[in-house]
Image (cartoon, rainbow, N blue to C red; front, side, top):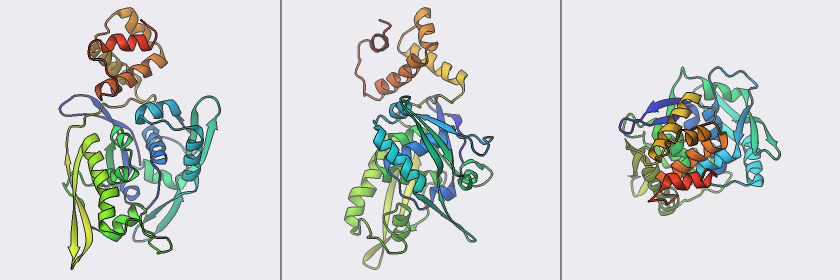
Length: 316
């Protein structure tokens, strides 16, 4: 289930776009690459509760790249959506085991950098139905994580953020959730040694989540006899360092408000320049991208950031 919502951060007053995702999906067993996850998060951000079956969702590749800070070439994206078409979510409760793919179809509009996505109808209730259990997590947080394991652990930790710690998972349960172990034992288990699991999965995920998201986590490995048997995570909130990322499909008034705020911070106040930027979709998206990169240190302009932005968009 997924519906975008804006909430105010308690200290900064900035607006954040949240995804709400059914807990059955958060704890489902599935394997995805980082690119696939970014496409899925983009899709979740534009879903609406009132959407009808067969709704087609448009994702713009340039906006995806601006939001993630990573470039995905055509072949990589084609491979990612192909995998999403064929790869299964495994959702189980006391009565049912559902094996279902996320996408019913994916269409690329050549030369326009647009992907049109259609979700599978059996997945719709898990993505949209807000009446049941859900997890909410901030969109810019999941985009900022480069490790696919960090993205998954962030989802899981978000489910327990109001409690302060997760349930205790057996290592088998945890590795199955991250597709590091085949529950049927038909494929080789990954990172069998606990030291490898810590180095390549747990420590990388913990570092990225703590540095780039609204959560701060640590983990405890629990022994049974002489061997490690279980794991649990401790979860606390923190002030995220990155800025909220706007979506084209968000409320237009909110987008304009943010843009004016960003222009004020860049000391761009000339009415003519402001009007030119607000009235041009490309310049407006460039403003959000520049502000995000400037405030996260990806663009250096200590003396006159506003002047640099105006030069970049051809207004100076």
